[in-house]
Length: 314
Image 1 (spheres, helix red, strand yellow):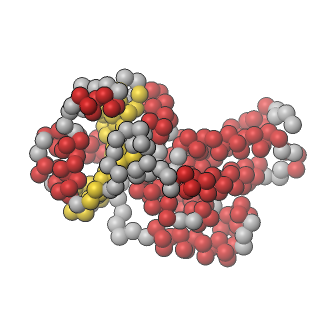
Image 2: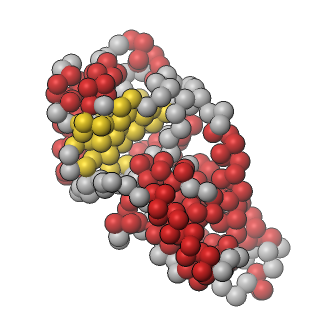
């Protein structure tokens, strides 16, 4: 069936919400974009006169597409080279979705998206729709063809799996920039003790190069070990510049709601270091360098104002 102007407008009005759902479910901006496009194709071919509530119909179709993608994604990750991390999304991107509540903001942090990999596909759907988008259990039950009581049980189980001992500290843009400035200054100082002071005792560093860019194959834990690694990582060298395609500029930014150091080569984002900050210091450094996971960040970077770099020619 052809799609008229009104039907296109209905879908476009829902696109941002659909992208926000898909990103939280899949942890990949690229996969989320594909899922939303596939939803549009279903909308295009549907008998829309029979659709009473387009928003609910689109949510259900998208969710089912994401459930299928989650199954295949987990199979792919079993053969993924090195550590897998979610795809970072820079501040201002509509894919981050609503950010009115702590739960909504927390749901797109790299730390939470990584934790959600522990959940079954159905648990993840229930948790995301309930916590991040505010859907009632009855609405979620209709999306998943379950009973409301079953949804409530799945939601409780998901929250138990995601229970954490501490939450990250929420910071505004100015505070985020200061944190990144301090982090970069310590990393470039060549002094391990300067970095240790910024880290929690049990700090973790995880890097995702996707087998394309070098990254340590396992997480590094402990403040001293992480500090030593970061000191080496941020020591300039020809081999590192060649690996990322040139001498990068380093910027302070916000990604997935946390302070982030963005590495830019030319007009391309070559790396995003997301800093998970707690009251005790930086608890985790999530470094994304896989080029396949930086395309949307590059588009967002090109379209936004980002000020002067902290280091213009690292």
